[in-house]
Image (cartoon, rainbow, N blue to C red; front, top):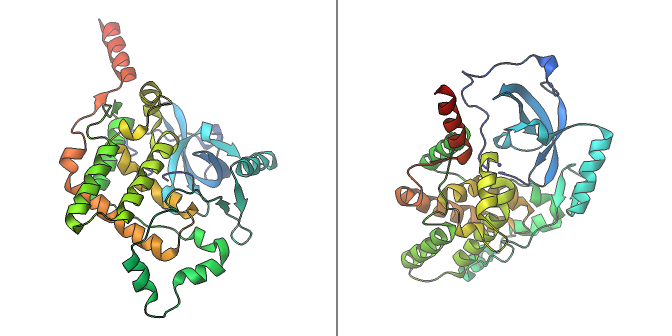
Length: 322
């Protein structure tokens, strides 16, 4: 799902102590209503789970139909549309424009596979070991089934301390109106380079596979950041710092790179790779996350800056009191 997959890191179970439950007839959408929801550059069928007023705005907790509940999230009214024939046609037109075809068996969209990570090289030893025993490889059956394997979800286990990092990150930005100080040091490019160096020393050799995967991650990060890895409060900062000739991976750091791993499970199904290679990728991603965890103190910032908007509001509030 083109998303991350923004929680790039979202929450649906935050404390509701200070929220006011609105009247059901005052909301544009009601609990249980089927809707169409924007997620990244695409539109998906979704179901409204609940509606609440947050900071004087209606927010809706939606579940994307056919997708794991991990992608459930709170969205604003600007990302929702009524489930009408006219809006369904808009969805289909957008899918067609982006090269998305409906899978007749599942009813879900199958996007034209991007080339990113398609070129991940598999070590020769892995290839030999997977076919040496004379057993039929799983990829053979997946090939016979056409695009059915694309729908198989990819699981990436994020270590518990990094999950807490994601929660704290969300809280700093969305509740405390603070932002990651940019540019980051180390940035994403630096972290990927450090990991490649670490793997080379650990394995005693430079592996092409790791290098290709890191190139793929960098490419994914640069493309995904403005679409699904930023919270709304970070977009102004992005527009100010990232110009046409600047790669986000040279500006942003571990905080946003970690968000990418939350979104990868929804992005990878669109990559045309074999099932056994997908399993190896999952393990390599886990190895990288453990590396992030090991270097958490030096890779992640210790404090967030107050956003310009929040600082301006604070100054105005102080002046009005005086």
